[in-house]
Length: 281
Image 1 (cartoon, rainbow, N blue to C red):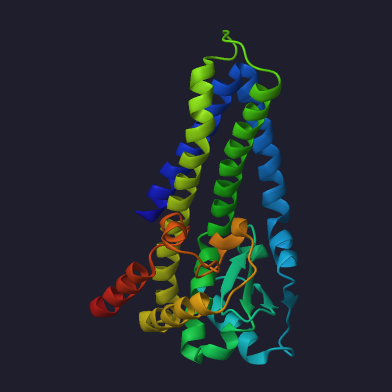
Image 2 (cartoon, rainbow, N blue to C red; image 1 turned 30 degrees about the horizontal axis):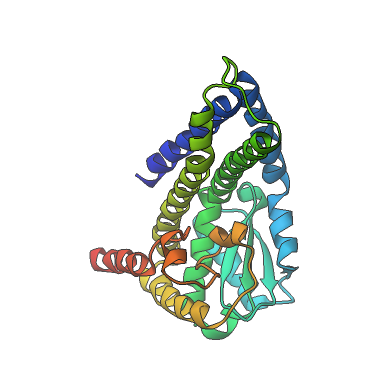
């Protein structure tokens, strides 16, 4: 069900990009939209993992550097039927983790130093299994493309806004209606953000369920999420909002508005779904 929902949402984003390009600039706008999307997707596909790891100054670790963590990742990766991913540690006090890599052969798991201090071995296993599920499902690639398409839509809207301010537009056969363009400049980026949020939330639910199966006990991840959620509210983290969807819990602090537009599902719902898996087991 999550896979079908993600496919529908991805198609929606793509059609939105085409439609907005056409409304803002006719055939020329559609062509520009495709060029922007292609360029951004190319960069994201090949270099997004390196960019985000460098952004957080993640340090690669070997078996000799962190034997317990490395052995845990290797054992769970084998259980999930995955190649051994690269392992990184980020020197951040906030307990958190994320996975990256365009496919399982290029997967990487990064954990903060803070997460190593507050979780039990079983809880850390639940977190690592969750991240491996993201790699197994190629969620990183899906999330990257979704973010790229949403970014391209916002970029087109900004370009159109500046074009109208400095050059104006004509109501012609190629460009379409200026009124429709104004509406799309406002509504388009908001709609794209909402679709991106829906994709991210869908993949988080899927990774929670698959991670619970990989670790062998939903209680491991359920307990970990409770601790991580509480700690993330108390310990700040200087995280880029564009990458916040990658973390197992939202690293950003905020009020009701941030929760409303969060790329992560409500924590209560995630824990409830994991607990229901325990009851069915």
